[in-house]
Image (cartoon, rainbow, N blue to C red):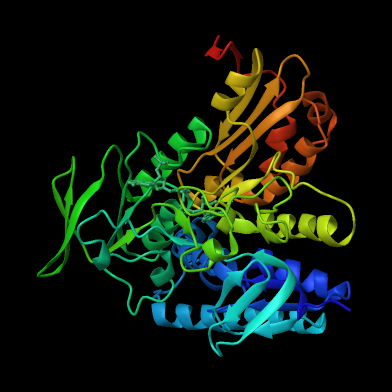
Length: 461
Ligand code: NDP
């Protein structure tokens, strides 16, 4: 009989924490999980899932416009923001319920309280003040938007958290940042009829993606009417008579109804008792872990965004499953971060897996780049000017496809499947041998027979 109250105590009810708690409980371990806000975490409550619902909502006005080319006359349309928020909230509550149901079904104890570490085996539950002990502890408290406290007037700005519950849709919005969240929300707000400006410090949005897609998306967004200001930053935000006044470094004074900061996310470790438990953090406050997600304290693990590895839901879930193998199945398993497919739900969408042309150019002496840019079939009748871009990056020596990049409709769906082919180590010859499926956009991926150009020693030839 263990001398602890629990075999496992998980702090944080997001993607990683819930998965770890549920599976450990289903293995017969005595498990408790504590969450201070809502079960489901960032992804379900104020991230991926509600964001995607908003993306769908924001696409309808283009669908209505496109309909005319196919013979449809769509009557006058209008949009009700409050209705969308309410419908989204119902769905999110349903999903939250499913998360709890899964935990309860596995016999994990669900605690609705903030929990803080007292020492390496003891946790205090803030709601009751009670302390409990556990043999193993998992920290899975996720992250939160970087408040950019150095910006004068930052307290007047919102983050993605508030964007999901705005009382009213503003007439105009300025979004600071050039990453996933900034770009996705710029497209959402623009699609819902808000005059949208994006301000980004670098030369081009989405700094970690393939240059071609970054440029292609920028052009497509600008053509829709989204104002993108690169090489610029906010200097000050203040209240004006009619909304907010923004001082910028290079574009003078601007105005906007709402300002949203999307400048990265910080790990949620403040006040968690990490020092008391002896758990080390890095300079950004992220919990430091080894390759098995174990902290410097033997019995404490950390999963997901709180560790500042790859901030993606499926990665946190994978880390949780590896933790289960390591801790409970006598099978030490390191999370595998190679070839993670990812999508930016912009409009058009980006879907990508593997190395960008720039990164691959640094790793391989010679590359073949296969690139197609075309008007998708639907756009012929709709008259929409959008172009799709597809790119395969191939290591010339091994013929392996080391990167696949798509800009256009359903790029995320395609990237998921391309992820399987790259993970399996498919070569360009495997792609060539695969029969095209006609008429689809994805068939371009198996019909690009001749390289568009080559890269030797990092230079295009
Ligand atoms: P990102 O890291 O994607 O982007 C942060 C942006 O803020 C970058 O453009 C960065 O610029 C800029 N930035 C950072 N600090 C400053 C500063 N001090 N001044 C000006 N600009 C600054 O973070 P997000 O907040 O967009 O998203 C957080 C994470 O959540 C993502 O990394 C992603 O992993 C995940 N996510 C995934 C989604 C998906 O899978 N579709 C959707 C949304 C989020 P620079 O590039 O120059 O560093």
